[in-house]
Length: 216
Image (cartoon, rainbow, N blue to C red; front, side, top):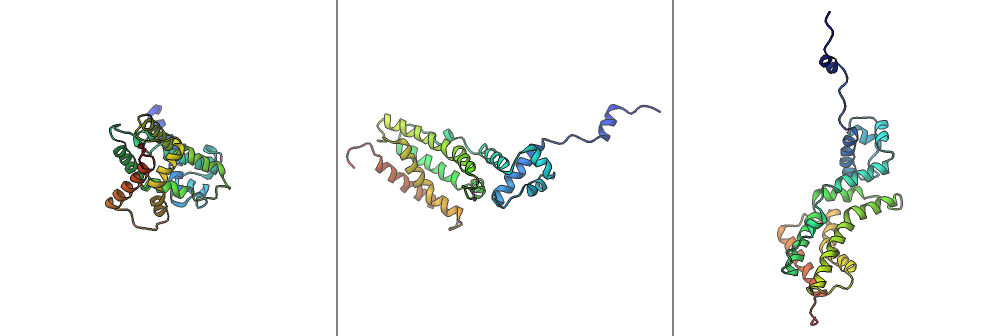
């Protein structure tokens, strides 16, 4: 009787699993995005990942830890802040219009809506999650825009003595109302024309407020 070849032995044995942590993480991203934090259980994630709840806990210590990892994973798929805030440097109004269009597109993207659903939880129940969201999805874009404002102020294209406050104004004007309506399903998706009108008026208000000219 001839000995079995190593290849044959390997085929008969159990094949190595793919990276189980990544499989679990993908399942968690999908489940959290569709059902939110409280609507998703570790058991449900295990089912989606075709594994056991014990394996999920072995890879991720807690539901909060897995939720945080899912937020970070989704964040990696978003455009880089500097890409969203890129400028030509020729005309500040045109640059702000381009930035506003990209910000609004990002805010109304279906994948971003999944992030909003994930955050439908009382922040006092898991305060670290709110902090993580802010640092991962808001602060980097705000800081990149503040750099744009610093540059515009130095070049006397705008007068911005408090870039942090000015960035808050800009983000609120551009993203505030459309994002809230989108999240609450309060209106049908904005048409291209409606987006153009909204962005144009938001930028016009901002430029009027922070115009470098003494004449207001």
